[in-house]
Image 1 (cartoon, rainbow, N blue to C red):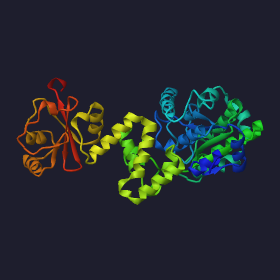
Image 2: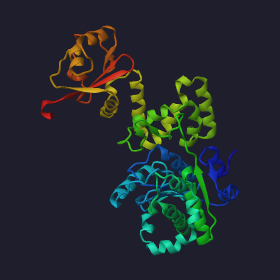
Image 3: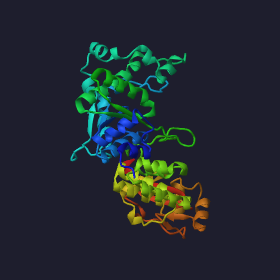
Image 4: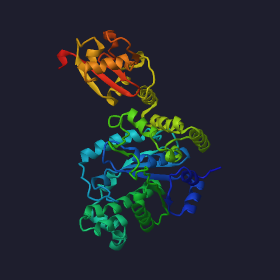
Length: 431
């Protein structure tokens, strides 16, 4: 039975490295620990690559400790060079403020920011970094670090050793700014632990050193693992790009499908990282899954749990039902409300016709671009392979009526088991 927070975080896969693990374990046993993770506001949304540190903080709070989320408004104006091949594009203060607002709303899905003794807080490091003059930075931070120490860091050395790359003084200073964040949070909030991805270990160690040298404090660091899929690419990256938490960037349906497509060899690890299910329940799910992997029991549970956390129950219900429909399930046209139609229309090929469209299904299929010819349409209907809003068409002369237009503007066809087509009915005055 695991009862120490550090043991639980390790067992669930959140900690790959930590400084002074025995002392940190003792700290967790003796007091409420305040821990922080920083998020660079380089976009208005986080993506699934951020979920490990987010869920790590969420589990800390669940276990009775206090999370701090740094929205890096100050450091975000510079950009972390860690294991980047080139300097990032610098954002304006206005862009950063907009991005922070979007990120804060998403973090509130995972942690409680009011109503608990260990309430999470969000702070913006621009508030303290902006008030520091350059001379103060050199005197109060820079003097604690040697150039030898700085250039020994892997991400700096990789740039210096490659004649086609370089590192600016701005980026070179980033590690010291992040170190000062840890010092500030230690002094102002009693923060004793900083967590981040494996690529942050060097920056975290710098923070530990600054707190020790400048304040005599004993603080700790821990890093999360870097997840890769079977092709060796970063977890959360697809051919279409990142999987975002913002539904306007990645629809809840596509978000749900991303988790449904999890590889079997990673499923147990991801259930531990991205859900609040206890370990015994996860073991049972995994055992049931591998008795019949084709049913994807574990993937469906993972997709349901994380989609519910990020997007809510209604979005999960719609995403799950859309998946059933698009993968061959039957459905009642009356359930296709505007929300469901919006989901389906965004995921399948589509065409359009004007009001007064051909009521004959053969002509309609051709006019909308669904079928290349009347002969193709007739063959599909004759073979029983055409479904109008879930109902099989058995007669090519049976008219498509006004009542068949879903949510006032769409007609949904299925051709065979897995080919779908959405026709949008447009009005002349809207053209």
